[in-house]
Every structure is written in structure tokens, then in C-alpha cells.
Length: 356
Image 1 (cartoon, rainbow, N blue to C red):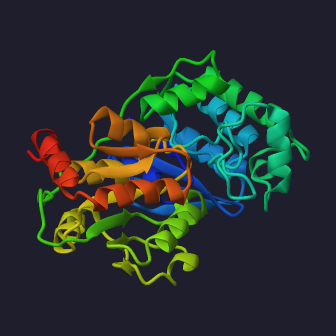
Image 2 (cartoon, rainbow, N blue to C red):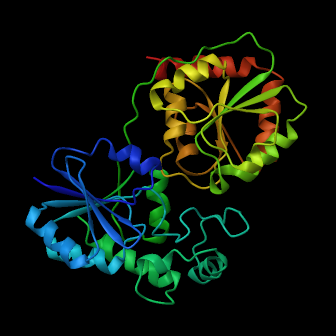
């Protein structure tokens, strides 16, 4: 039975999650500029410049259900019309906080976490200062407010057959903005990765891994502060992924470049990593990098917010800190350098759960 997956084709956690959804009966739909791109089961892509011709094609395919993973670039009016024409049940997956925050990450123009502001008037001011107004990309209203934005998403969500969050913290975050919704939690699947972490290494300095791409909302500013404060300390950082140019000037971070999931464990073992730092200061909805680190047996240091902190605290598998600054990370890192045995004990505690 044909299923339609609507997403943004922007990579990240959405792409990783979708890999398990691409069956022989799945069609993918995303926007590329003004074009609608429809990808069939055989990975054949077809571009539509007319929304009407797209709807006709989907109707003829006999789509029986729709899974909405992201609406970046899609006009909400188009989505409503499409769902009305197909007249089939649809489910919504909450991969980020787009419906709550048009800027996606609760990060202001000053590169600061807003604390998940609820007041739509304050949010309007924040959005007005942002470079590029994301609301205009998916709405037909020229001067839409954040209050109207959330109202349109609520209308779409209330008619969904199900709404799925990948973590309890994401569910709770959405209910702060949309308390009338029913949201169930289904964590993403994470493969059992190998090789697992060693409990102890012979080095005397601290080896910290930074996994994933690090730019503005993913912790560029606090990581820069952390690197600055540890320049003459017994700490070495290893980056697996892309980092912002502002971070490349620091000599105490070694760039290993991009990685694939199947070789990450070997990279971390080769560099004798002690722990992983997730510097993101926005509330992640799942954080594959956090779960991959834990699955490999590495304790995680992160800020006390979002799914990253939820995973660490639930499994007693690392340390969470506040406030959301590089100095807070620095203080915890320095406390660990004074007694590396803390990390060995933490790894041993984790081994019974993750190192199977």
C-alpha cells in the first residue's frame, strides 16, 4: 500500500530516521526551490512545477497514508489541500520544534538560547530580527504572526491520526505550546555499534570527542569558549564532523573530518577517547550523536536541556551542566582532569547496559 513521506531533504536526524522508512511502497516528497520533487521506490525523482499536477499524480498512485516528517519549504495551504484530496490518515513526527519556533532551535539573533519563550509577542520581535523570515516560506500570509503560525500548525496537528515524539522531553516541550494535543513517545532506533569503549587508557591528559557538525545552534559559541579556556590545560579535543571556521583556529582541537556510523567506534578507540561532549545549546528532540556515544560506551557531557540531557540522566551515563555556557563545560572538564578515575568508573557502570 503506497505511503507518502513528506520531508525537507535537508539531511540530519530526519534523513537518518527515514532510512528505515524507505520501503518498496514509499514515495518521498520535498521542495527544491519552487519545484516539488517526488521520489519513487526505485529512487527515480520527478519534478513538478505545478501543485495541481503533483496532486493528480499522487491521487493516481493511490496513496493510503501520509507520514509528515518536516514541512520546511512546503506551503501549509498546499499541505492542507493535498491531505484533503488524498483523504487518507496522516501521522506527524516531531523531529524538531518548528511548530513552536519558526527559527527551529529557540536561538535568538544574538546566538542565545531563549529558554523556549512562550509569549508570541516576544517571539514576533525575535523573528523580525532574524536574517530571512522562515514563516514567509511556508505561509501565504505576508505578515503572519507567531500566534497565527502556531495556530495553523495546531489545526494541522489536531486532525492527525497520531503525533509521535522521539523523546519524553520533546513531548513535554510541545505540550507547553499545544496542551490540547495527544502525543506519544517512540524513541528512534539506534544500531548496536562496535567496537565498544575501553574503560581505561594509559594517557594522563583528557581526550574529549566532539561528534557531529558544530555550527551556531549546535554549540559553536560555548565550544569556542571551552577551547579558549583549555588551551594550556591537559585536555585534547577531537572533532568528528564539520566545525565552524571560528573553531578551526584553536590548536587544541584535532579535526578528523566526517564519519559514518559504522566506523565511529573505531575512530574513538584509535584516539583513546575518554568522553564525548555535546555542546549543543538548543533542546534536541532525540540527538543521534548522544545515543551513538552511549551505545559505544562513552559517557557524555552536555547541557541540561533537551533529549541529550534526558538520555544522559536516564542512563546515568555522564554529566549535565548549567548554565548553557562554555565556562560551565570548562568547570566540569577541569574537575574530571583532576581524577580520570571518575571516567573509568562511569564507563564500567555503563558497560553492563551498553557494552553487550
